Image (tube, rainbow, N blue to C red; front, side, top):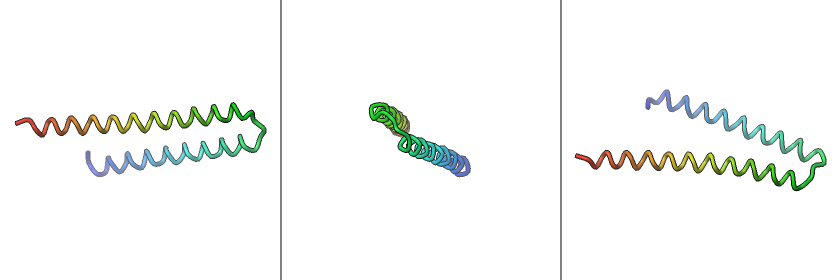
Length: 77
C-alpha cells in the first residue's frame, strides 16, 4: 500500500476511535449522574468491553494470518 493510503486509513481509524471514546465518556457521564440499577450498569459495561475485546482479537488474528501467508510465499522457489 502507498504511504498516502496508509496515512488515510490511520487518520480514519483514529477519528473513529476518538469519536467512540468520546461517546462512551458521555454515556458514562450521563449514566453516573442519574440513578441507575447497578446490575444494568455492570451489564452495559460488560457488553462494551466484550465488543472491544472481540474487535481487537479479530484484528490481531487477521494480521497474524496475513504474516503467515507472506512468510510461506517467501519460502517458495
